[in-house]
Length: 475
Image (tube, rainbow, N blue to C red; front, side, top):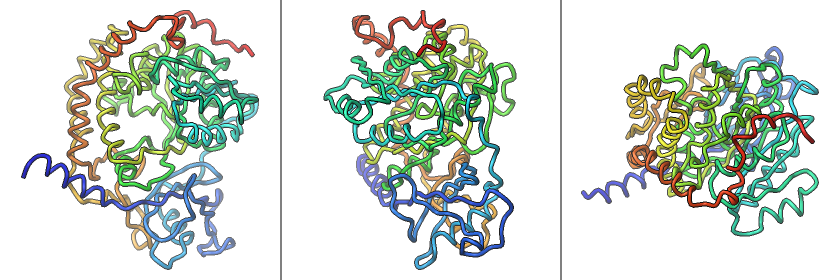
């Protein structure tokens, strides 16, 4: 059998993956009532995920909330003819991670004035949903900046001008690249904290409050990240990406402190993918400006293919600032839909990983000894991260659900993806590894390409070194 035939058959097998419904279930925040299907008998409030139809029978990816706050995610099956709310409520109650709701973040004057930056390129329909969710935030003091990156049409400009002009500032960045666009947003930011998200997310109403409140509580905090869950799992590519770990980092808050490196993270701080993702991150504005912002030769839209967010995380940690992950800051992300999209993403993940490491060593050579000391373990970690898993195992997490209807599952659970027991096609594994080989070369090529761009055209690169003292509030 030829290689091309094997690849085609493998892809066809994974294209048979069925869609998974996305939903959220609100459980009572207080003591458990007596079991039963009705409102007085303890039934939860079941809602479909953003943009999803009402829940019916079949596989369901379920976010569990208490008091409106995310506490767990699980996967279950609603039998045909069964009441989805009753089945999923019972399943959620039996799950060990869906305990009491955590205390809410501080509100009111204790949250800092914040700038939200959304970089976009030719996705005005998605951008509208993202902006609608931003304008529904309960944060009392924030502004929104849309950075239109190397636009081909006026769609984003027209959308902002027509529908959001009073609440949203529109900025154009002609040089393509996510890091360049983010640096443009950073230069325009007037907030004490600058938060970044993507144009393909829908933010929970408390997202910005939960993401930024830790800065008020901890003066040494330089960065905060939050939870990213799938908005829809309608295609095999979306299901596979989420089963591979997606963007979720679990439901346990955690603070990373460079003064006290975590004992369970021997590769710290170079495993930056554990800290969070660029669709849900915030920085103290002065801190991010002081490290020069994001490396403009990294990120989607450049030859480096990615790594801009990881670069930002490690640069801030390397300057002695803490990073905090909070699962209460939730955004719903629209994963890419097609198999070709997934192949591109797998290659980009690999390339972005080694590109950001190259960028770190080029811009901060003092990190080289620490990097070399961790290199052997890092290579072993990379092999595990990209390993193919030619198995039909469902990757089910049914802890505490014995005997509960609907306790079967589909690949992976957010926060439990480090087990790597779910299927991952050999084709995607190879693409990730090829991307890792390419990443350093892609980064160096991206740097050379930027040198050919007139400095006057790169708004996101101009003046970054001099912005350290500009983080104060000016409105």
